[in-house]
Amino acid sequence: MTNSQEFIKAAPIIYTLNEAGYEAYFVGGAVRDLLLDLPIHDVDIATSAYPAEVQSLFPRHFDVGLDHGTIMVWFEGETYEITTFRTESTYQDYRRPDNVTFVQNLEEDLLRRDFTINALAMTPDHQIVDYFDGQKDLANQVIRAVGSPHDRFNEDGLRMMRGIRFASQLDFAIERETFKAIKDNASILVHIAIERITVEMNKLWIGVNWHKGLSYFLSTDLIQYVPILADYKHVFSDLLDLTSDRVQLPDENFAWALLFWRVYELSGHKDITMIQQQVRQFVKAWKMSNQSQKEILAYLEIFIYRTDHTEWKLVDIYGRNQHQIELVETFIALQQENAQVLFKTVFKSNNPQVIHELFKALPINSLRDLAINGQDIIREINPKNKREIGQMLKYLEQAVVKEEVINDQLALLAYLKDNYQI
Ligand code: ATP
Ligand code: MG
Image (cartoon, rainbow, N blue to C red; front, side, top):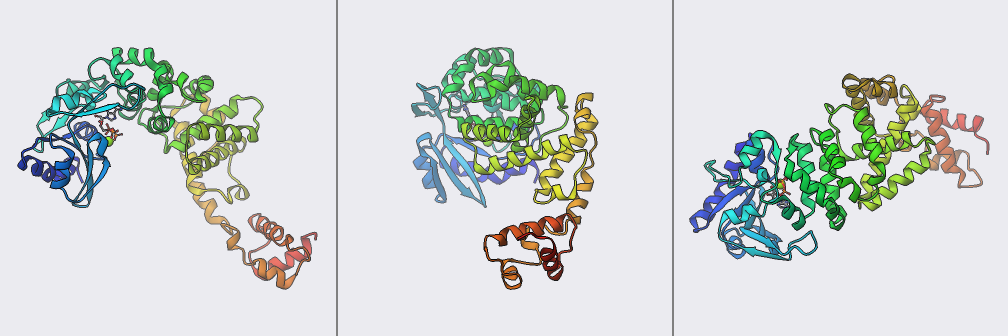
């Protein structure tokens, strides 16, 4: 689907609102991304209709953010957020507005938005409404706050993180006054819920110019006001020196692992238990999921393994995630091509293609693939201590992976009887 088809698909929603006598426009990120010819994520709509009126015009809806005037509407298999024109006022805690006031005109609604490039609106026939020179900033690749940057960041400190996140995602520069206001107000970030910061930071890492995003994270001092990372300023600088910005990071957990791998490398004592503990503390402080923790730790182990070994051994590949190893190897290969000499000294060789072959060569992929199970061991060997069974299976698993015995029931039993010390 081309970009404008997303809007063609959603146009009937706008027409329905128009026919009922309301104004309605496409707004925000979707309009920005259309003009940049980037993939569109969600098409958001702003309207002069009140939420109750939107609800009655679109029976298939959920009330997702009724307090903020947002109704989620189902239409032709997609969902769209329709938000009543509104302003926000009296932000007392630097995060959420205490008061949302519905207004009747679009300009006031656009005025509450964070950056000029996000404050564009569009009609279904592609007329752009642009009160703050957002199109000019798009053309010049600039992130500029709408109105007074100082005021905008004092209303909502998260916008500062959004600003550097967009710099990374779009490869845009932050306009001077906007940059200065972030730097002056960076400490406001301590009032922002960490979950929201995590979302922005994760998007920053995987942006097309993550180096630019990270450089802003450092130069704006935002890094000073997030948990734990303030201590790692030198690690970020090291990572920027070590890597090329031409190689994007495949996912956010990969990115965090890359950072902690540098923490580990630079720490001097190279203590695995300690770095794993540091990752767990970090994940907790940043309120990330258990799944993220698992993935960060897995990637970290892969990075550490590859720093210590020039290539993968079959026994070491066993039990790991093929996709994760391939992502790391591909990253190493691309960095080798693009990065400074330094990176080349860390990883001596690489060959992402062999990983696939290695996994194919594994005789088993998990304990379940063993040609023998606990029942078989009870029947054939019947160890007095039943706890031995698990250890025996692990012993055989290792032997099969090391290719010391073939994965065949009789061979495994014979091997066990000959070699395992009960
Ligand atoms: P993404 O590609 O991440 O979805 P987006 O610009 O669409 O980027 P959203 O968080 O989906 O970002 O928000 C939609 C729109 O709402 C933004 O384009 C912006 O106009 C406005 N907006 C979102 N968050 C804020 C905020 N914290 N302050 C002011 N305006 C905001
Ligand atoms: Mg969006």
